[in-house]
Length: 132
Image (cartoon, rainbow, N blue to C red):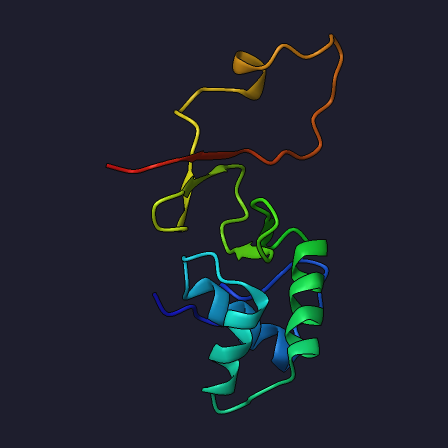
């Protein structure tokens, strides 16, 4: 899916040309790529950039909640363009990471026994298994 410039705006973040191109590459790749994979994509573009620039762009996008980091075991960090609250399923057969959503109306408090008054500010859920 091609991302347009309107979709590439992040509230509170000045979108430099490099940030916009990294964000565009991530939005067009739902496979949870690593920084190195995004760097390779950038090298094939009209505006190649350094790996450090890719990391800096990703860090800024994470800090502004535009994207999420996905960490599975000791593997390199992957990046998810889906900024909505969701979890991940790690297919151990292929290594692929899939977004998983909560069923409509389900709240974290429906499945977790948290102390009364707990405020959840962020969460990461990764389920591992094998797809049929």
